[in-house]
Image (tube, rainbow, N blue to C red; front, side, top):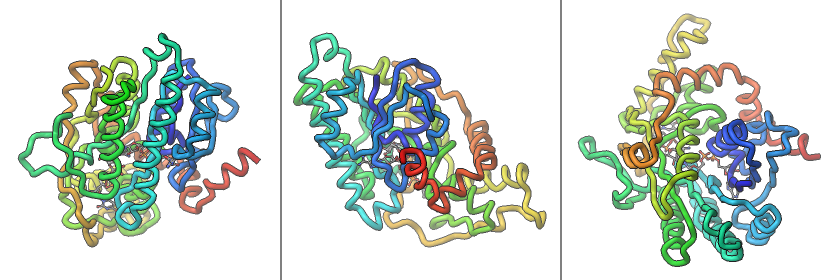
Length: 351
Ligand code: NAD
Ligand code: DAU
């Protein structure tokens, strides 16, 4: 089996669902269930014996050691993190604790487990660390996209904490020989995205008749990738990535934020028109900028494409339409997240 951490969050849940749809190999899913962890994302796996969920912290060394000894995974994929930049600005502590201390403790537990494996299992074992393009800092308009050798220049407490974890992962390979792989991906979007992030927030606010808050001038650029394409890239890197290597993941879809918001408004105008016949664009409101806001991210994914033959399945146009449709079709999921009722799921499910 494989051990996935953070598998009740946005990307982790998509990964677990896709994994179990494509493979017979079971998943042990370790997630602390912070505000961002939502077991409703995994509701379709209810009763599936190939999915074992454990609520717990990656920083809990004893728990992780016990899970590794009991389940003997052939790979550990670390998705668990505090992931929201704005939250890291308001309160960096949790980011240091999970993204740095948690990753460190997880690495230590995995190192001990891996060190005790027999030769064949040891050679086949992988630790895959899921990271972000934000560790590379911000690009000027004419700069080339980030390659894997771009220097680290994190600008927010979130990206600094992810950068620290990337460095630890690298060090565990160089110092101890731990068989690691790291992926640095651009902005994801798709089903189960928590509505604190740009795309889902705009969709749910638009439908609720609330303002669509665009930071600063709205001309910051992000490079968008449909979440299931990120998942397929991770599967490919796990399968064929070279030990100790880093792979950038992205879909060559750079867009200014205001263009994203306008696209969402146009799709909603088409799929769920406002009762008053006006466009959702009327709700766009420019607000105070994010402190230290990175201006532009762009990923050069050629290494992954050329060396491992990975390609995204979705264009931005197909992915964003699917995403808007998913939110329109999953009003209950949105309502439970907004009311906090999704947290009762744990109680209902595990009482
Ligand atoms: P998310 O916030 O939606 O989910 C994070 C999950 O981790 C949640 O289920 C949460 O409960 C769990 N978690 C948090 N702290 C934990 C801990 N100490 N122990 C165990 N579980 C814990 O995040 P996401 O958007 O799904 O991101 C997943 C990973 O991908 C993160 O490492 C993030 O840095 C990285 N990433 C995200 C994006 C993106 O656009 N969302 C892009 C590139 C990389
Ligand atoms: O680049 C990968 C990163 O993408 C991941 O590592 C992070 O975990 C993920 O949260 C995301 O970070 P961003 O800060 O880019 O995502 P967010 O959705 O918060 O914001 C996207 C852009 O939209 C950013 O320029 C800020 C802007 N924004 C965001 C919000 C929430 C707004 O203009 N208004 C908003 O209300």
